[in-house]
Length: 128
Length: 231
Image 1 (cartoon, one colour):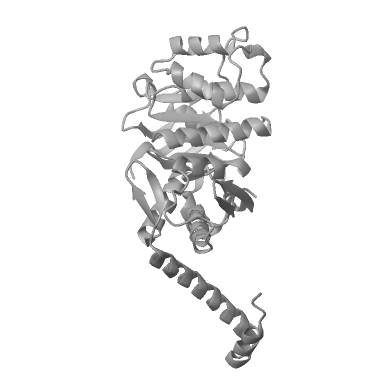
Image 2 (tube, each protein chain N blue to C red):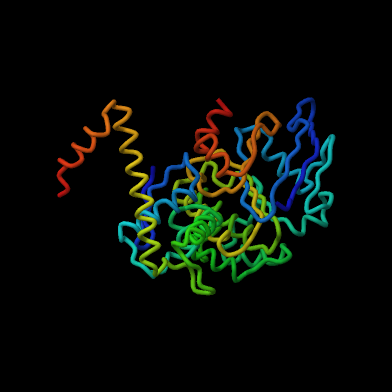
C-alpha cells in the first residue's frame, strides 16, 4: 500500500487490485465525503499519472468510468469536472452507504448475531 | 487491438544453446509493454531480433507488418546494453552528436528531457554516474521521433533516484503521445503502475502474457505473479 497525494485528493494504491478501479472508488468516496467540491476540476490525466506513477491510460479509463456514472463530466479542451448535480452525489452517497450496510449485516451474520439484536445495538451506538 | 510486433514460432540458437524456443507473441501498438524475466530468459535476444541484430534460426518475425531489417529499423529506437557515447563529450555535445547520427532526432525534445531528468548539459559524459549515464542514454533514445521504442534493462544496476526519474520520464512521454514502448526488466517494484501489457519470459519461452489490469484482477500484483512464475 502506498499513499499518494494529487491536488485535493489522496489515494492509497494497492497493487494487487486493478488500479483504475481504485482510482474510481477513491474519487467516489472523496466526492461523497465532500473532500472535493461539486463542479470542481479533477487533476489532469497527466498530473494524476505523474503523481500516482501509473500509466496515463489507467487514469483515462478511471475518468471514463466516472463519466459513465454521471459523477464527472468531460468538457472539451478543459478537462474533467465533478458534476454540479447534488442529486447525483446523493445517489453515490446512498450507494456507498448501502455497501457499508451490507458489510455490516454480513459481519453481524457471520458472528451469529440476529437482526433484532443488531438493530438494538445500532440504536445504542454513540454517533458523536 | 492493433499489433506492432509479431513472433511466429521463433527459435534462436547460438552454439548449442537455444536462447528462444518456439516462441510466439504479439506486442500491442500504442501501449507500454513490460518484458519480464530473470537474467538469461531471452529478453535481450528477443529485442535484438526485432532490430535484426540477429536472425531467427526458425520462425518468422514481423515489425509493423515488415521483416526486420534496416528499412523498418528507421522506425525503431533501441536502447541496448552497450550504447557508446564519447566520454570526452559534454552532454550538450553528445546531443549534437546524436542529432548527426540519428535520423529524426529532436534536439528541442532532448533539451526539455534534460531539465526533466535534472542533468547538467555542461557535465562531461565520462564523469556521469551509472544512473546519470542511463538517464542520458534514455533521453537520447526517447528524443528520436520513431514508432517503436525498445528499452533493454533501463533500470538495472542503477540508483533509486535514477530509476524513479526514468519511470517519471516514461510516464511523461506516455502522457504526451501515443507510443509503442517495450521495456525489459526484472525490477518490478517501481514498474507496477507503468505497464499496460505484460509478457513473462522464462527459459526462452513465453509463460504468461496479457493486459496488466486483467492479470491483476485475476492473480494479484505483478510482484506476486512474478514470484509465482519464477520461483
